[in-house]
Image (cartoon, rainbow, N blue to C red):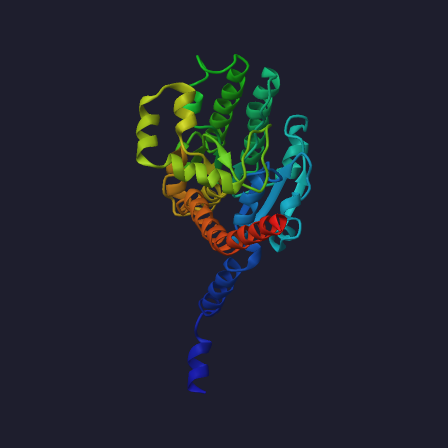
Length: 329
């Protein structure tokens, strides 16, 4: 009774404050409060892998792409059901419609880009589309970070003397997009991660437009071109020769870099990742072993062939010799 008498004199606000704090704590830990990330081009080669990694990191993920569908490579994977796949055209949608699609994300990743030979298409597909995307995300009012897959500076340096004239529009579009990403963050470039690969490989197929090689082949080339002699040669050669001698980067590494930047709430400056070594270093991608694996496979097959030949070749010789002997009778 003494205790009750004492507690009855405590102001109700003081008694409630610990309860309120506990409720607030549990609310902050609830699934509904997970980081909201929108991936522009989320249905594409790189974007879909960004979506996968973000889901695995616990983010609430929205993909916006022209198709709005789940990519075929991951349709049967559990994580894909946790992404909100939205259909939208960044170039044709008005601001109000686009804002309805984009909402108010905490972070955005753009993997939007096109290749081709039409300068107008290249400028709009790489530039204007990204401007619309980043502007809409900014209007959402909650944007904290952005990541954008651009193009390596050594590739950009080839536009003057090494590439056809129409390619200039491709690089102009990329520059416009980079600026839009920074503008979306109030001009603070430290809140934007620019991922700038030379050539991205991965998946299971080869392609021409955009140019692409599969994981096994690309991993072998990456490991080969990481060797010191090729690095030295690339450093001293000009233009496209230099680019061709630079190691390509795995799509998983590009995606991991984008996802890491989007989820980085440490307050640290976000980096510019220019080239394969920068991207792999930031993403934590293990060293490629495609060349080593290929050589090991060849070694195993050679041993198997030797073991087979050691048994079968003498048998074949004996069979031939028997036929020769029979023919002489």
